[in-house]
Image (cartoon, rainbow, N blue to C red; front, side, top):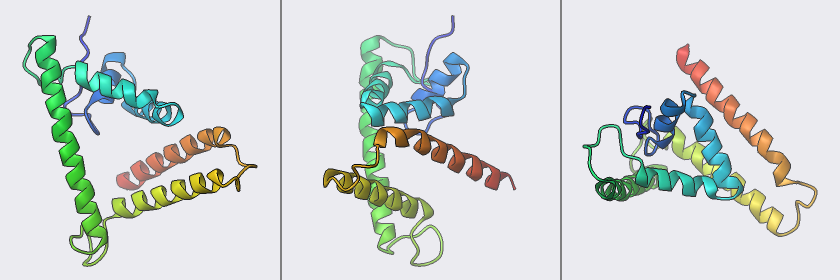
Length: 162
């Protein structure tokens, strides 16, 4: 039986979904969406992802004991957290016009989209906390969110092919 490894080539954060998808012989996008939904619904998706990041060895890692694997993976988590923090700082500086990926003075597309999503989600939560969205059931919105994410992914892939 094949052993489970985190993917080195098909990774967004740590390669957990890529490796698990290869092991289960399914599309990694399905697992990524599942982990995000589970993280948003009850937080278990984040916990399962972190545990798998800690205990599942990377495909390119040297064989060793479980303790060595855990130690390497925890060190990797720390390095990745520092890397993501640096990317966040760079994105904040980019929105202030200090560094850009496109034309002079314009923030990168990711920063704009990410900021818009955060503002929209924050406004919805704030309005809900004040009772102004009693008529809106967030439990019924999850399928719409999934459809929207799927459409964005498909449209981006179709746009890249042409």
